[in-house]
Image (spheres, rainbow over the protein chains, first blue to last red):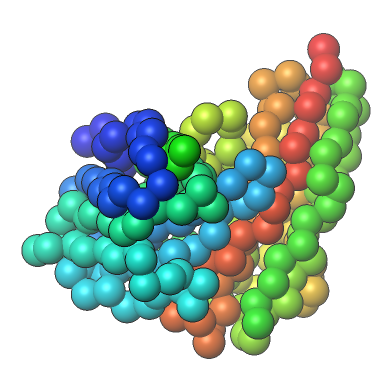
Length: 114
Length: 111
């Protein structure tokens, strides 16, 4: 296993368009997290899944954001009607339930909204 | 609300010059405090988990300690390859497994 992978690595879109990102976690990890990171800041929690169940979603997350994890495997994060303020690095991480403290991060998807 | 504050924002050291990074936290019941390292353009890499006050963990030139209000990451005799952003994060018992990160300390080690 080569770790957490994310696709695409970079995405440039125009304001108002919808975008979707994919995350493939480490295969045996049942917890999956999404974060957003802007320059000079730490990762900001967006949501997390245990298997296919979305257990928590940040109150900061607008209704334009939605995430899924069908069958408890890969996950997708969709942003509808993108705004310039959505420009950021979107990070995915996964962990084992019993090793919940150790999250393995992917390389991220850098989103630029023009 | 759970909160993490890291200081300093940036730290410049000469190779071999030991120092410490600070992480102050406010959480309603600590489940765990974490340290991560992040290199430019990459995702964070896990370093340590600390669970209770008084706990210490070490890895090579790094040592993390924890009190009821803050954590320190001590760097002994740093090398240029230790240059990175070090992130502190917490999970509170009242927040599920939501992880709150600080803004990080950017460490520069000059040869």
